Length: 298
Length: 323
Ligand code: SF4
Image (cartoon, rainbow over all chains, first blue to last red; front, side, top):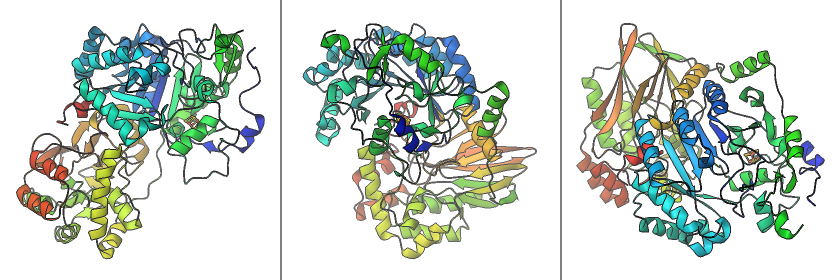
């Protein structure tokens, strides 16, 4: 049976440091909920075809947040899931968002057929703000990628990247450090070589550490109890943490950041105005953000 | 249940709560009560406080009718010489530099006498901040290792050849200035009003975001640099956001010229002109070779295309670049 005890020990909340929202620069949307066409074994929100923890957001649900966010000075909008293109309104959502500011979509690349890529490229060209894409890839070969992302995905991801590229878009390839050497110079060189083989002349690559929550906790084991932030961890500021300048919208309200959407206490309110206050960093994932200096935005 | 049924990636109708699976209803019940829900008046108060004016005691200089503004000298004393001549021809009353005197080019000490002779009023960029404080990196804000590699070369070159006295002078520069041109008040910063190393690119600085920055600063116009790419936008409120450009290296457009900004009062309004500036870049290249600076830097000066600092470019700006 699943374990039903709360995820955060009560003592953690009294010793956790608080992070202020300095400015609202990045507004995230869990646009397809936690529903995905893949079930990657390292997914920190455990997205899968059957995960309905969060459901898709409609265009009508998103517009009020665009209005509220832009009035608060949001600088950029990010879309993730699950797989954003499972949302039947995804293209209209992007078109609307680009009236407010630049947009970035984090996708697994599987639904990027040539037709859609041409449409997206037109959108990117006709808009004054940047429309950017990030495609996830976790190994430079099928033998390394597919055990993480699923059988046959390597070829399909490369096809998606190549469709984007042929349409005139140049996505950032996002690689998690599921293998120790993915982020090393040799590791990066291999990814650059792979992209060069696809004919991509201006390769863009982003490395991300893994968060040992969700599915990843099963793959490599959960955090140790000492891996938490305490009030005694005092850097000059918490400005390097994404939660000092972002919020995440899901179908159930506004969360502190894109990482903690499966933690009910990561939810801060219903409208953005409810969530401009400080947040107690009780979770082990916060430790990863701090120690690795990671930010989910590009 | 067998092991597979418990896999977090095979939910079978369960929800994910941290590292566990719980019935969907239990998760939704917990989230329904999480966070705070303010009433309408409190929400308005929160929003207003967030975008409210921040106190700033910077004195306002001027009023002027014509000023020139430039950024990013990057040790390019050849371009600085040309700039000082150009702004004399423009008949400006004041010349402002938005910081980043060092990096990239040769012989940092050649810049200072020119700034003094030209009466240039400067603010600190991240370079001046780092050099004055004796930091071991330029705090340019790059995220890519290749960009950082080249940033380190220019920074350690500049740091080693900048006198202690020049560094002290840099440390005494103010971090921001306010200037009247006609009846408009401009705020001058290096990166953004919030952070010395924030990148404000045209394609990733939406109008509402810039309006909020101007509200918070109580200014009619914002002048900044840091990215190396110049642009100007008149906002829906009638205020201006201007990336004044840099004179240290070309704007990644295949031209060897560099850019500065001219602001002139005209009636109740101001006119803003981004101006290209030609200079003796062949002379600079000879000096860069003599100093054994990287060929990558020299190529940029000679061709107008950036060979480094590309990773920071947003999709739209990257699409227009050669590399
Ligand atoms: S997981 Fe990271 S971004 Fe989210 S609240 Fe913790 S420190 Fe902040």
